[in-house]
Image (cartoon, rainbow, N blue to C red):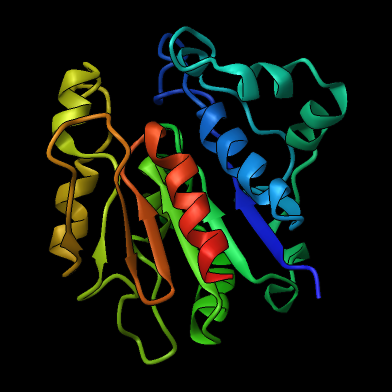
Length: 227
């Protein structure tokens, strides 16, 4: 049976202020997609509201805009996938072997409280399939509860974009909350690499998380290895 991956992307285009655009950090999708594609996995895209997923402008500039991101953006068929993402209500979690939450600051707004994404994530996790995220994608795990009412992240080792990295990226005044701190408040055993912006990924059972945009490949490889 061919393994299937559900990639989650945002619908949000700015920081509650049109002067500060944001969106999907493209390479966090393309790096993982490429790894999954090399393994022959089938892939689909879902977003909290369905429909278009805007791109984070800073992800389309050097050094973040690499060949996989450029190739995606120059391929009308691939861009069409981002224009027509599925709505969570259209997704049967039983069809997927893993869910992968992409990042970009936009996801801080629409991932945490999406009941549809929480349902899919819970169902995938509870049958022992893989839940994964990279960078701000872990905001999609903040409020997901298991069937017994406990938080999925409680007591779990995980990583995601660090507060130090928000400060270095000069967006600490723009973000709606401190995601690292919120994870710790929920009982997650948050970890980060020794140096900011370098690849760092953590596996705890069937939960796989990566710290920052540079961690997307490593995260996807760890997911593929588990599959």
